[in-house]
Length: 284
Image 1 (cartoon, rainbow, N blue to C red):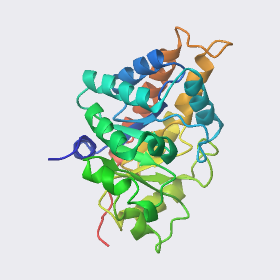
Image 2 (tube, one colour):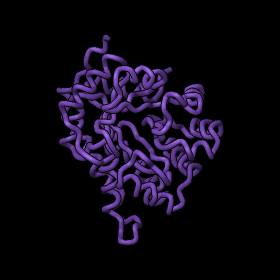
Image 3 (cartoon, helix red, strand yellow):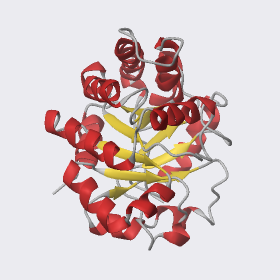
Image 4 (cartoon, rainbow, N blue to C red):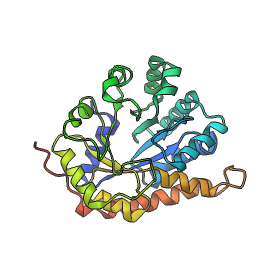
């Protein structure tokens, strides 16, 4: 039986368009507002959702997502509450793939077996854990796969041909290509370089390739959607959320709408690239 992630990418491939993958931080700016945002994303145009697990030391994240994590932690977010948020979302939406994204430390402290069991029960479909390299697959990747969760791995512009087989060995769901070197939200991706990188990755894997880091608006989303299987947007969304908050950092009546409006705009950009979207030959 195909997972929700596999089914969604297959469905979109038949429609000859890329997926819009949206990232939001669990508990930002508070758990109630975060839950409302999460439930609103699919109708706004999100095809897959990445839900951030707040952590105090997010080494791969830029200022926008770092700030989102700190707001969430300040509001009382925990890993247990993140899982509860996921379960509440799944009770309302049985179709949209949900991926937890974050770092290994909170999972390790929570307990790997407990975390995987509760994530699966909550309706989570996959994990992205950015600080666990392939050499540490026994820590979480292999147990996650055994538990029925996809383990999405990241490839970067510095992932060369010697390293790529290790990266791909246990990757499932999709491959997340980080389009720039550095932290999230730091720069805009160069279209020609992204196209070449995606084409190279497709020669080594049949997995869908989703591209993230630096996608900020409908225009940049459309450009990526014309060459990739998915477009990941995170920093732009959490920054839109931040701008909607009041002076004390609390949600306002505009907060949910700020995210919804941007996702709708991004979705239009992704869908406008439909005719230019065609998966390249995946033969070696």
